[in-house]
Length: 85
Image (cartoon, rainbow, N blue to C red):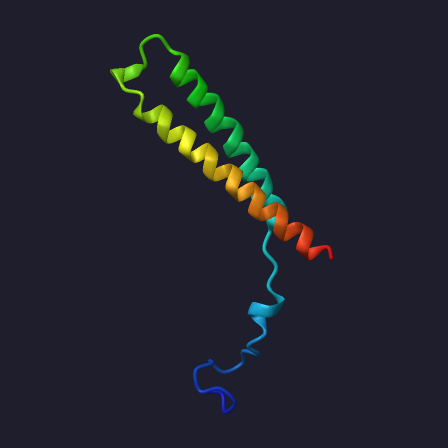
C-alpha cells in the first residue's frame, strides 16, 4: 500500500480522474446516429397501416430512445463547448 493514501494501490498517482479524457466526439456521432435510426424506425412503425404484432408499443419505445439521444446530444454539446473555453 502507498504511504500517502492507504486506499491507493502502489504505483498509482491518483491523478487519473483529473486528466482523463472522454471521447466526446465519438459519443456525439453515436448519439446522432441513434437519433436518426430511432426516429426513422419510429416514423415507419407509426405510419404502417398494420404494425407487426398489431402493437404501437415498439414505436413508442423507439421514440423514447430518440428523445434520450437528443438529451445526450445536448449534454455532449455543452461538455464540448465547456472543454474549449
